[in-house]
Amino acid sequence: MGYSTNLVAISTRPHGDIELKNITKKRALSVIFIFAFMLMAVSPGLIAAQGTLPGHAKSGPYIDKLVFNVITGDDAQVLALLDDDIDLIGEQVDPSFLPQLEEADDVEIVNVLRNGYGYVTINCDKYPFNITAFRRALAFALDKQAISDEAWDGLSQPQDSCVPVVNPFSIEGKLPYTYYEANIAKGHALLAQAGFENVDDDDWLEAPDGSNFDVLIECAQSSNIAIEVGQEVAEALVALNIDATSVATDFYEYLNRLYFHEDYDIVFLGSSFNNFDVDWLAYEYWSEYADEPYWNFPNFRNASYDSWRDQLLYGVQYEDVYEAAIEMQKIWVYECPMIICYENILLSAYRTDVFEGYVNDVSDGVPGWWTNYKIHRKDSAGGPFGGTFRWSNPLDIDTFNFMASTSAYTANVNNQLWDSLITQNPNGEDVNWLCESYIGETHDDNPAVPDGNTRFTFSMIQNATWTDGEPITAYDAAFSLNYYRNAPGNPYGVDLTDLAAAYAQDPYTLIVEFDSESFWHLHTVSYKPIIPKHIFTNPEFPAWNEWNPDPTDPDEPFFVTSGPFTISEYVAGEFTELTYNPDYFFGIEHPEATPTTSPFAGDLVLAVVAGAVGAAVVILVGGYILLRQN
Image 1 (tube, rainbow, N blue to C red):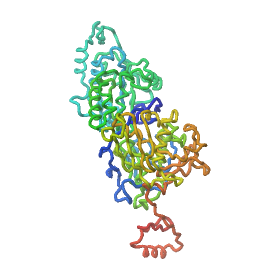
Image 2 (image 1 turned 60 degrees about the horizontal axis):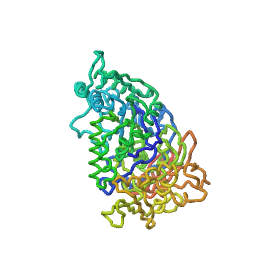
Image 3 (image 1 turned 90 degrees about the horizontal axis):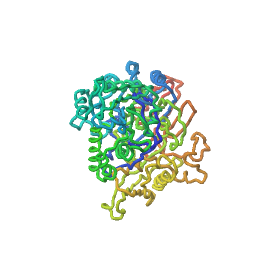
Image 4 (image 1 turned 45 degrees about the horizontal axis):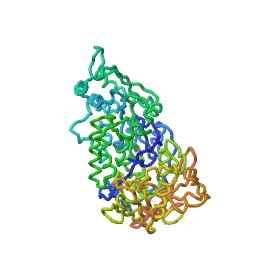
């Protein structure tokens, strides 16, 4: 996961929970040495109806234009899709619209299991919630399957681990027990063994020290799913003879208390992850962060859990960090500082009458980068090249400065404009992008690497250019990393404190060195967008957080990008239009369509067809004949 710092955006999404969205890049160390499974190319199986597209797995885009229309509200977005005003709903679809969408012609609905979950966090600092038996008893008593069947109407599944089941590091399904279905008897037995008993002959158990206690479960009043889960938790506690009440309340108020480790009993939250790194396990539940603002909401302290931390963070071999991640999850699931309630299904909806090649990304679903890159017109619509692909975007872009926005909807646009050394394919696996290869070394591999350091050597591709025609080189990549690290407050620099050096050995060889050894360092640098050194070193370039470019202004001096699309038009509050970049380094040439007006409908059409057999595809559109060369 690219774990967030204290900059957190909160949004109520159709996941049914209030989700803590990731904004900044990774706080902890991050990434990988050379393992073949992390270097796979795009999986063809995830490219729907790709068939025999021209080019190769990295080729794209095939559309001419990409338009993000600002359409606020779920109702309006669904209506726009049904009315053929957009081709894709640009966020996950609320399940309540399923019947309406399923009845529509030329509309497809697909799902992907969320890389995230809804959960309740328990205050482990507060007596008697600090007793493991209390938390385990609740976990056994809670009917997670009922939450999935009833609250989610079958659109979720139970989850126990804090690492989502879609993550290859997850322990889900590998333990000898689960908390999926209610086991009240087991919960009663655990409480009895721990000394919880009814000492005053009322309806409720007292704590082992004989004191009365009750439990307040707080859930967001803006989410029906949250309210239902809160009620399920309260009912499970009551079934254990524990006095409990669930209250729907203001999410932001109790979130602020969690941030600063103030008083609470149990509250409902949700989290999503943007990749499969799990180095955050070393921070999120670390004992030393039990009183650190913005971290460790359950105030969890466990020495056995902490004992695996160094191996997870600083192990060099995959096997070492995998072992640590598994052992930490075993302890975590047993101790239940939080109870994961479900991992739900995310729904995407799109039109099928003109375009095909939608990509159901394991992290984003269909509304993601890979869909824009691989979508193409059907043969029946004159494909595969050309056309305008239309998204709905629930909020307008707030800035074209990708470093200064915390909006996921702004990122939908800005992500089309910048590239990184390595990206993730639709399976979530690493694929080299601006680099064609790399090696990772420690002192044991290469005596020239200082003892205790990790060095990465990237060989960059040599045909990439910026939109002003300048080449993209290792000098740009090294400058980018140093710029992020040295710019105060830049969100892309918060995880670069261990970066010892980043420099270009030659125009296409990048050296990056960290002053510690870790399997996780690679993604720290390889996922960050590369920026043009010759632009950002201009004496007139503003501070990173004061840069507010207008890409539609022909006199804009500093908006030089690299991505598969460029901004061609923007109307605030209405839409952002992007046009494919014909010079993109993995781009594929779009053949020119030749329109010909026909004053003599019958004879001219026949003549063109006769002369084009075997040489071109003839497409009749309105009053034009379009010749597309084979």
